[in-house]
Length: 361
Image 1 (tube, rainbow, N blue to C red):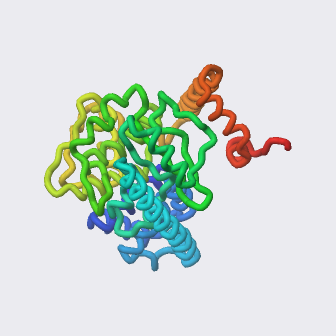
Image 2 (image 1 turned 135 degrees about the horizontal axis):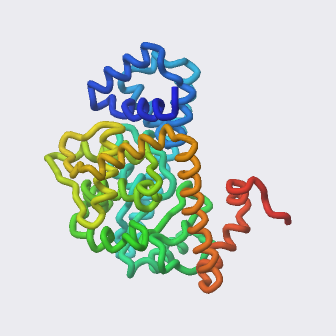
Image 3 (image 1 turned 180 degrees about the horizontal axis):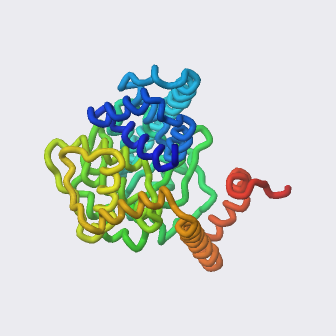
């Protein structure tokens, strides 16, 4: 089973709770003993959809087709993720109450937003990193100070003026790190999709403020295709595709998702995610030659030849190098960036992850 075959199989598995056609196709493939479960585990883990895969197979009553030891492992990882997400939800609610009591209204984003909204049938489905929320730019510094008084700490004492969020902050007794956003997109795209453009369409549930479903879908696409350069690199993200699929299925009537300034990334992402999983019935967008070509390019990247492998590695290396050089250059003139760089090179865990060693004492 190739990487491409495993990815496309997982994509269809993530829809079997909702799509009978895909359910029948997946069941037939499993019963035919054509699934390389080692490949499926590897790809689903890399894409952070391993628990979601388990939950969907369980709801479809397909687990009896799988090896017993695999089912036990999947259940174990999913149970751990459920416990973590229960804590994430608790901490996010605490943050919400704390900030509201100080007249600041946080708008929760991405995975945390999905958990708080109840997007998933089982909260264990979503693997969440940080607790992300957006506040008015005028409230950034006040928000940070409030959270510091509450016990959150950071190694960078000043704010970045040109980044969409401040460096993550942590609490010694909390499981979730926090990213306080003043923008949702990279600096060069931020004017098109920001606090000002979304504030009139927000909605509140249980005293928690979230983006509208339409803007949740946009942010899910933009987070990968713009912020993580997925459009440029022609890379696929199954976790994002699954989120869009579920968000699209929450639309109560036919809804056109459009964005004049970011149509290339939006249409390309929605077309790709609909192809990889399935298109929600009420989700409407523009599928054109450019978005169709993007699908072809992304699929081609799954079975690359030697040239495209080297090209993609070089592009990824170039983007990472460019980002790091820019940060190092800014650190020469900007105290915030200097402290950020210093915090990284003195962080033992970060050095282990990046380079496999720790600094001498």
